[in-house]
Image 1 (spheres, one colour):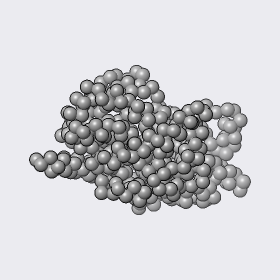
Image 2 (spheres, one colour):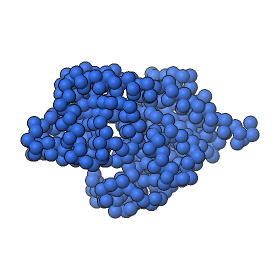
Image 3 (cartoon, rainbow, N blue to C red):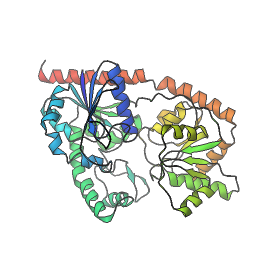
Image 4 (tube, rainbow, N blue to C red):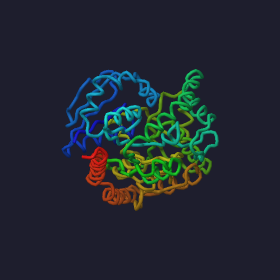
Length: 412
């Protein structure tokens, strides 16, 4: 079976969604499927590669990773090109793992079944996070989004001119994306929590949605060599860094000796801000290469995930468990599904710095041996539930179903 991945970003570019796409490409190609990936080409990348069992074609689509969902929407020239039609005609199934939704109508016109993979809430929220920045909580609106919320989201990282343009796109073009997604034969959600939220707000998708957990990277346990905590969400507001700072401030006011929190994905900071964070026990790092990342990870006895949005999956939680770490995480979105049965995962209410502070204090009191034992239990429970062979079987079954459905429709 020929499977065409249309993924505007591809690992190592992007984040968790792109990692999942890459892992699926490897799993499927190793299982005998013929996989071709079409993606963007960044500086220094080859136009074509096939070193891992699947073909990757890189096209010059856009220059940076900002505004990807609309940057790819604008490339109608590429979508209607002769080469794209050749890719689509070759495919038995077209797989859309991120935002290339504009390809769905063309694929359907050519009679190709489409599987769309959702890693966020884009069908029901133009910002994709289902978080109301203005109200400071989960968005309860159905089938529309507040312009005030869109503006507040965009003002965090853009100048005025770009805010205006982005607000216009999110208030108009997003409705086209919703319609394109609805043309898919099947839609994959990465957790039951994500599925329930999407279907509740867009019941028309209910019959098409299937839940398949993301495949797991090949990770070995890392020895705990320190008593620190790790935080890997950067300054992102939905990732809850501000909640972590409040919790550390609570601990400091109690006179409790602060733990060290190794925090990654931070840009260069002004001296006064770095000093403020250091006083709370936060050691900041930028983006680390694999060797540096491993060195920092070994220092950590536990990993903190204080998210305040409905994370559909959470690779940071999965990695922490597979690395043998104690985890302190918000009980939100798909995180409880990942943590089910793991005694070494402490779930807390989202956006509650006082409960987070108490849990950090408790975990800090654990010896390294106790933490290691909890981590080992986490690995055993988690690995028995999230096995790539089962995930591949579920995905393969969906591929076969979509082919059968297509053949029935055309009367074969």
